[in-house]
Image (cartoon, rainbow, N blue to C red; front, side, top):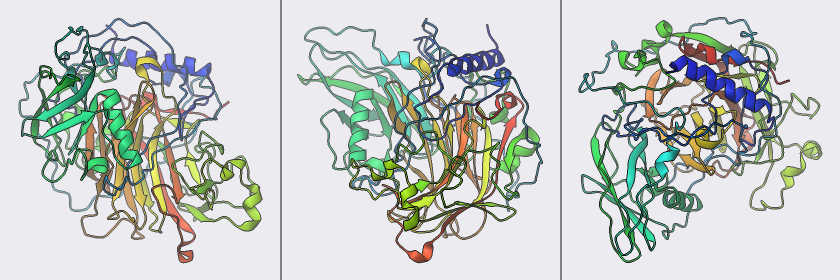
Length: 615
């Protein structure tokens, strides 16, 4: 049997070599390819490999790792290679208004026109690291390692390395019987579990007529009806309805889309942190016949902070690795210094952007405008004479400044700014900037943190996130994105919260997004207060934890957590389908400032940090 390190390295090598044969990834937003060391490439197992079933998530213990692989059996599958994906537009993060309004969402998206290969000789970090202290989190109590309810419970089995995201679980082996009810729904499982929502999935039932409805029942009396003919006036909510039906899945509770309409999953119906619920699902056909209920699924939602992490195995994790069980993960100060090493940093102390670490373009170039955004990201790297440089340097920080487009520079804008298919959006009304580490730096797992000042200007959206380079193919198709912070200045849809979101895609390029999770500043203020704040994310196998100013604010776990190398994206949006059009002259220039961006990794994953410009 291969060791976890063997799987990690063999899979990465397979993806690296296959990516070399396809220099274009039609993914959205950032991407990291480039000249990367083969012997440290840590992508997942060869994409397209296998049709084996991953373990079904029982969610029984909840907490981090809930809904991770359970008892599913492996399949045989055939080999394959990662051909770098051909992704389409990115994901919609929902919004902050009620589901009825269907307020936008930012997500990323677009067509990746970036070139570059992933071959090249192995190389170490070409930039000297200068470890620097991070801000001390004030008023922390002594750490308390959470105790498992039953420490003797066996570890949750690993997902199948040939089918890590459970594609094989989407098929019902039972045949329909003429005149009978639909077949019993199979493989009810938790794909992701968070503090107050979970994504559930099951295999479609079969019927000699047509399956018309699924009924998802929770043991506290809550029922959800999932049908293909349900409607909503919000485009985003309608897309979510259609996705639930086409993928036989459901999010309990998608408060971004259905807080007050259709599924009405708030008002006492929303799952509560730390509580355990048992779910079943049935299918009903066009004759009104209802199937037998699925096998029950127990899901424990994660406590609001420091939830115990059950023992679990993962083919990317040493079986003896108990870091997440042995530490209080509720504050960065409790675990970072003794367990992690600095592997990437930019302190932004220079007078210009380090183009060995960053690019000033996103992978899809100028041809695609995503999310109805109204700014044009000036690519100073490739077009230094554009006439406006959004990147300012104070000697100790980077400031991205967004301004209205001066009349004399409109001729410099690309043709895509006058897209006749989008007459509803005033495109390229503002100039702003974006930096991305694609083709410069990527990693698999670790802790990423930025110390920043978010913009409080009306219509400004400060974005800092991790993004995949290649979507993958076959059973390893995934296309993940972890939004570390999205901050909407003067939020017209509600309170000025800090937003955290997770996105991925399932085969068929079906975009899946968490509800737009939000965190309110505890002192009643907001994060656009002109002060420095740290925003970070810990990314481990099957576990993601978000931090603000060193303290845990949200977490999720499960088999759908990203297994693909990610890179860093940092930019300032000015007006979009989510952010209103900036209209106050006194707010300009809009500003998004970074004191530093750093990445830390445990020894188990430092070999996955890859450096090098595209060739």
